[in-house]
Length: 102
Length: 225
Image (tube, rainbow over all chains, first blue to last red; front, side, top):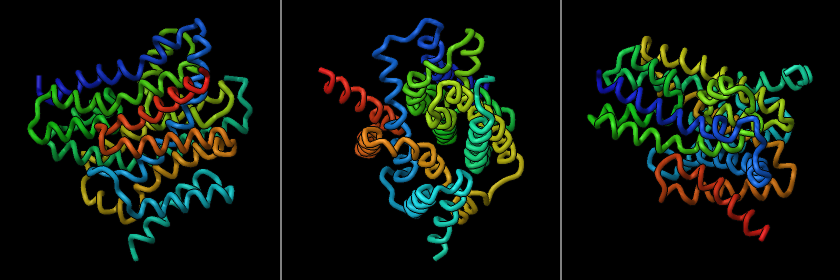
């Protein structure tokens, strides 16, 4: 087997184990312990915020401040103006591209 | 899924499609990276369908192209994907069902599916959002990977020029936005973002997102005691 296929199969197994722990082990038909349910309720906000922060302000070498920050600011304004989801994404790309072109 | 109002269903499908389209340039970039690492189309597609985790795929392919061993590549990729554990815990309550359904649903436990799901209020909407986001990204991620391998390069330049790399943070922010109306959620979200960024220099990639989740869990425990 090629090194690539060995990597693919092992990595697929490893990532699947991580992906499936919640749904398979916790997601059975028995209900979750109340403590875990409350935790599950409160995890989305910090996890989503962490995704925003990491995808905006980090690059291959760690912290990065670049034109994406402008895009994020533009997206925030678009959201505040209640623009639809697709428009928010386009505004962010447009603002970032504009800054890079200057 | 008949208990989801048509208007919710439309909104969720729009979100799922938008975020799936937003990841396509990265799928193309992965295809190009795989090709440059000497992988053929089958291997590249094997990564995108079986592994199906963007960051882990990029990490593993870059280890392979540097001449690293399969074990190193797997460790690098798996470490990056630890966060899907946290997403799984957050979403377990809405992913109930037969063992077969849960086994299938688990394969699309990725950032984007989790984000679309967590952006919804009702459990049925969350479940629908998870599946819609996961499947939309799965299809477009694999198509764009193939496009990257088969057609080629110069794509990196376009991604930066057109600001396409800013679409993912914008999409995540749009999914977070409704929660920010609530003061408590706003505090939690801000805390999560700060912890994630603060731990970037000291933790391997992927772990700061878990750190953000853990910090909230710990802070809550303290406030309960």
